[in-house]
Every structure is written in C-alpha cells, then in structure tokens.
Length: 332
Image (tube, rainbow, N blue to C red; front, side, top):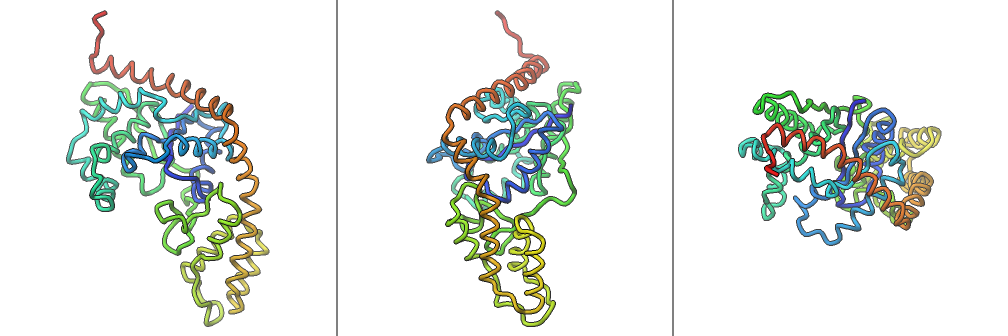
C-alpha cells in the first residue's frame, strides 16, 4: 500500500479552511493509503522559537484531529518531537543540502521579508526538515497545495542526491497529490485571499470557537454598498460570502439570496445572519467533539503513545538502513 505523509503546525486552532481542505482529504486517505499524519511541533520553532504554551497548542491540535474523524486504528497520528529518528535523519540530510538552494527557497525568502529579526538556522534548513518528515517514512504521496510544491520538489532533490551520492536506490520520489484537481479554497472574512491564520483572528472561523464569536466575525465580514444594476457580477468580498454559504447552506437558501442580489434587493445583514446560523448548525457537533476530546486526557495519551510507537517503528527502520548506507559501524 502506498504511503502518505502530511502534517500541520500547532500554532493555532483549526479553521474551516483546514477542515474542508486538509482534514477532508485526510479522512478519505486514511481508508485508502498507509497514512502518517503528524503535528509539526519542531517545525513551529522556526518561526516561534519561544512558544508561550507549546504543550497545550499540541494538545489542542491532537484533540481536533481526533474530533474531526481521524481514526488512530486506521492511520498513524503522531507528534513530530515524539520521533527522535526525525531529528537524527535531519542532521544527516543537512550535510548534503547546499546553502544556495536553501537561500533560494520561496518560503525562506518570504519569512526573511516578514521576520527580518528572526532569521535562524532552522528557518534556513526548513526545507530539509520538511523533506525528512517525508523521507523518514519513505512516502510516495504528499497532499499539498500550490504553495508547497517547491518543498516537494526539494524533497525529491534531496532524496535523489542521497541515492546518487551513495549509489543506492533507497528513497522513492514522493509526488504531490490531491483527490481532485480543483482544491477547495475557503475564502477569508476580510475579503483578501483564502482563509488563513496569518490573516488574523478576524479572517478565520475556527472549529472550536463559540457561536457568539463566529457570529460576530461573520456579521463583520467585508461586503460592498450593494448592486447598482440587475445581474451584475459580484465583487470579490461578496462572492466570498456566497462561497462560504456553499459549504454549509442548503441550495434553496443560496438560490434565494442569489436571486435577491441579481434583483438588487439583497440585504447583506440578512445574508450574513443566515450564514452565521447555518455555520453554527454545521460547527456545533464538531465543537462538542473537540471539547469532549480536550477533556479526555486518557484518550489523548493513548492516541499520542500509539502514534509514536507506529511512527518510530517506520522511522527507525529507515534510519537503520541510512546509517548502514552511509557507513556508520559500531565497534562494540
């Protein structure tokens, strides 16, 4: 069975963009592939080297993964730092990564631009660590968006370089994939781009937030002054509201407000109120599951332990083979 690897940073709660994007794919994959899904707590240190509460951030993401349907019996769900083999392989692979190619990484240049006072070595070698997350399980597929395709190409490059340097055919070449060519892009509430944590709290609807919090955000979502003539195209910020409705509202509701817009009769307050109500219907059972999981320390401990054991079994075999290929030998 082909292996799939993917991860998410514990730097904030999951929002509906994550749910309809990555999580939706994960729920399908766990039944069809040998899946390794991890919480990237080591990765998070590259941009947050002194996290305020790393443990609880990890706990929250673990609970959300389980609450949204990841089955620890059907996939390997683990915390990155629970697998020390990742850090050791990261050390070895860094020896064959070159400064020029790391400095040309789009993510590195963007992070330097945004955080010029936090340009650390981990940020520079981030593509190597990302590659190791994939190579350590000798994965075949990696579900990523367009913005991550360069990292997959660098992963293939590092794997091929290792194979070439040591004259072996050890690491497979992982491929980026999704279940459809048209990835679900969930728009943010601020009218600029897709929903993202980097867009700030006002931009995202988080799975675990209370109804009142989400409703206020939706009611403040950006719109325009309203259509001036019938059947005119919707501006981006208004189309965003309709795109969000397509995720949680019934078709008749969407058609009703679309008709109102085309007839220049739309009331944006009513539109956003309806979206808020339907969003709560959708999120309430998910939020209940998350809160139940967060209170169940036994469940979370069991999930983390099982995930670590399964991930280490895979990673330790890869590392054993890599050490032999490189030439490490014990004298005792």
